[in-house]
Image (cartoon, rainbow, N blue to C red):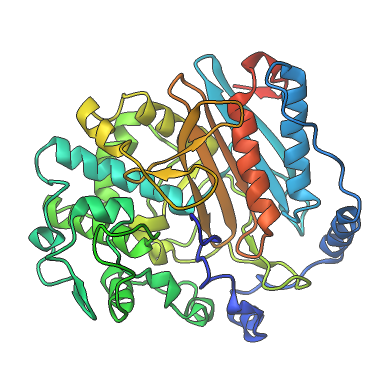
Length: 417
């Protein structure tokens, strides 16, 4: 997520701290083994004297490579994540680096081909699918939402007759975010329950808008649930079918899926964990019904597929030039880091100049970020902890993406594909 972090942002910075949570999760999901306790104690001890991270040195490939490895190790020690993965890709190939473990009980290492929940990086897939419909002249960006979803957006000053599809995609609709008003206890009590997107939208519509449409910028998952509903209304297909048709199949993304209600992650994957409090044990939250994310955050993918997707998108191989220009028309988000948001795609300055394109993501059990440059470099980072990771975790994930995008391909000495 952006600005208000942690997958289910404020809402899911886990009220699971209330003691009922451990009992509510599926069997075996709570507690920490002696091995995991020992690892946590070791990580805690290292917090007092973290190993310094080498400063960026783009002119020195080896130093850049060392910094990336140090960042991954920091994510799994000082920052407290069980495991971390980065996959980098350029025109010459892909490389995966991992650190830490996929399972805190079994102490198994991360598989380089791991799948994981990508959270809000889903929004880039959703926006791309919508823009494919714009190409086909089945949707118009500046049409009112009412045109496609008559009567759906109503209540407490929210009005689909005043909001455009573009504003949904760019977080300028003013619609409140349903995650700000969703009681996390409802998810924790029944993590496998189906959650209908309209029901989630109506949670948001019970509250007044953040601002008049177009008058500001505020991250809203509600808008992307509505985009998914527009896609379904226009095509007659499910959102999953349309993502498959317009994104997954054209790009041959064999490790990407839109799971609907299925709580399982197909293929090799790390367990996903949440930490409900500073000193609380990790909770295994791998099994959760992803319908609570839907078109705003429900997709499962891998570092390889996310990089391939971003490379094709930014490189102009997925959308026509006119639609890609629309996606890359950005506006500031109000932060001090130079971040700007387009249509499901954000841009951010690289430390040594230039900009990259991508998105961040959180879902129960995972925090992710990915970026791509227009000259053909991509990087995806995943840590299997969230919510409950520190702000330092988010900062180090972002630093890892930027370091990976800035490093030379010749510096990579990890596993080659």
